[in-house]
Image 1 (tube, helix red, strand yellow):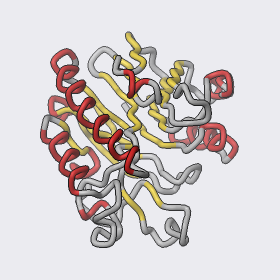
Image 2 (cartoon, one colour):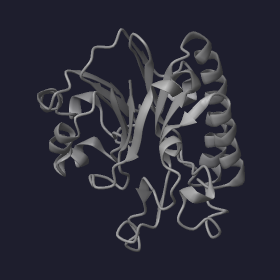
Image 3 (cartoon, one colour):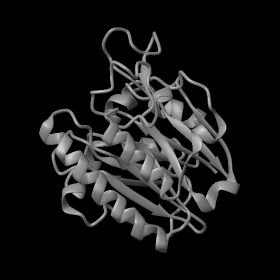
Length: 253
């Protein structure tokens, strides 16, 4: 089972840059998308189906052209859950879950903290999300949460940890939250298989950051602890260039 997570920074823009051709070549069973920035009627769903994904689920933000998540699957889920039931999270289209026979997959787009107001909103989201997942795991122990967490976990996950120490996405309080979240029963699947530095999933469009690999690792496939023995591989796919992010992949038996 190949699962990919990809913040496409606008699904229509990504499609115009060859995303669907790449998707056929990458050939995941499930792909979780973030920041789709489109309503379903703006997405070429027939073309997506022709690329091999008959099961498509979109959860856009109520604000057009903003945020939103999706999951495309080759396998029919037994259940689909749009949102969390928490209004401030669901208004911006940040959580979508598919339940299959032996595990569930969530596409997550955690807010960024671009200014004081958004940082406060991010902290509220993080607290509410932790409580939501703590309860969800009682019902669904085999859970994979794929997405853009907008947080680098450790210094190894960012190109310049010293100068970014006061920037949202690498603030001590954000990193501490992500650390607690992982320790509450989740595995950073990439780090399970790869301990090397200079592996990133997002680069600024400024200052030629991607060409110089001055990036941040803020996209994760986190798997709940009961799935550990079923994890076989996890990699970052930086050659895909349809966005300022790149995809991250996990394989599960």
